[in-house]
Length: 234
Image 1 (cartoon, rainbow, N blue to C red):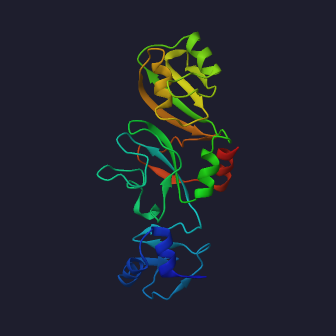
Image 2 (cartoon, helix red, strand yellow):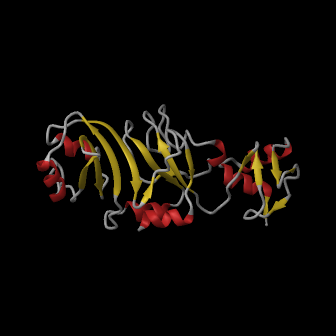
Image 3 (spheres, rainbow, N blue to C red):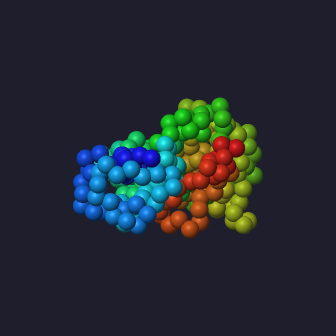
């Protein structure tokens, strides 16, 4: 059992003082009953706890799948620019959330947001080589020379890329499925640019073996289950 103000604070990312204010205003309920006693204790694992009408998720760490829209940066703080953390629903916001890996501002798709630094380190560490799968729309078709170069490892100005996989989408060579195991700056765009091909649109559709949920519209998100975390790590 845990004090309700602490549960609200941890699950919502608000201060304990703000959590108490919500409780006093009658905006918190446990199993459907409004709670106004800040000292009330609840079972954070089994009780249904709501704040401002939205069910809260209380756990040591959270893992969120977001379908990142264009124009939003993959960061926890962005100054004047909106970040993936900024656009999370209030019910999902909590302290110390950050994106595990980055997508360019104009790249869309699967971003994993968490507050578990150890997990993020494991999936981002180059030695673990977690594959990331993208769909790229190109200004011109790629050919066998590009396929061969990707498979061998494209040499960029400042580094040598690890071997990558590339295939056409339904026979359309202006649309490519690209699987990489690194995360260098603008990597896929730079790899194609070396062959005179411009990436018009880029979307991440998979991390490890976990695919982006098709029901998520740009900007929408959901929690990732324990089983799904295994699909990323494997």
